[in-house]
Image (spheres, rainbow, N blue to C red):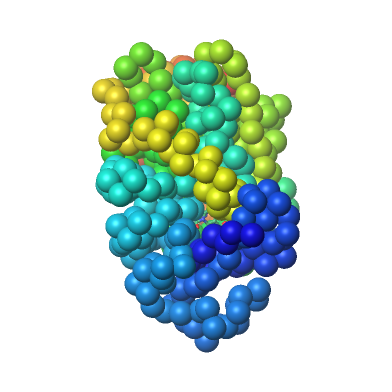
Length: 432
Ligand code: NAP
Ligand code: HSE
């Protein structure tokens, strides 16, 4: 049987999962592609580490030699980060190799350069694992939903944040412990800041906007907020009000206008996205023919992510990926004009939590600022004590009626300056 030679650069969480599937399911994979998928070289930083499922003699630190090995036709980039990964991918394409990558950071920031290089060298870049781990969302949008104009995407796209939020809400874990556990399970990025500050979800959102809307949104322009400011009390207050807090990535297309943002959002307990737990991801799509649909599954971790990587290998082996790549015309091959809608103008309801000194007139002062900004209060919660602060400081929670985001943010800025307020006021939009 014909063999397809693979060089895998990076053999950590995802690479380890890929090596396991290639080693344990060789026969199944050969039946599905009509060819044998052979790992010829595995490039790592530390060749001394134990690497199950990989023959010692194919482990190397020489990426250049692995890429240029004539028996290799596919290079898997599973290193992460941007700098070295970009070099490896560009070198592989220039050497005439097809590339499979799980690197959303790289594609969100250098997609145009990488896809131009692939077209120049008549090669393919496959990237199913870059968004939502094991969920086949790239294939779904590029192939199965190709008849549609997608107009909306709402998703839980970061497994680590969702794992942290679920652990805090369900088992009362602390933020720090939940993050540690997510790292131990291999969900988090090498730099977990990207997971918790909304950047990783924004990287994935940029890729989804590219394949669904045909727009290249500069990454820096995607407004993103993460979960690092969120406290256990916010989850409790939200719960008391009938909501679950999720880190939500959203992309909307309205004519030539595109809106993209990532932020924690209060969702009704009954919302399907509110019920997505642990490291699972979910993507809700609105298509003009198909209507609304939702995809859900493991969004991070060794085997779920490797499932998507190996699917790309099979697609390359049978020639499907080559056809999809040509037809999809991604990044600069099909650049579409658009304007980015500023978040300031979007109307929403808001959850606001301010820590205030328990003194006369405090509630009235906060309410006055909201009224001055024409923001109407829907409900208020003020309990008597707060564990992590002295007795004189209490959380004041306010749910607002609909208001323009810009106006609301201006009000919070002002509230933060009030005497008796311990800034910053923490706020999230409410998706009813
Ligand atoms: P990881 O566990 O940190 O593994 C990184 C691997 O790359 C390690 O084997 C490391 O070598 C190697 N490496 C690092 N720098 C290198 C360099 N300059 N040259 C050669 N090898 C180098 O990362 P991961 O979690 O597997 O993630 C890999 C990629 O998949 C990232 O782009 C990530 O965003 C993406 N991804 C991850 C998940 C997930 O659940 N983890 C899910 C979807 C996508 P050593 O082993 O010697 O240190
Ligand atoms: N760090 C990422 C996450 C891995 O937690 O979702 C999957 O892309």
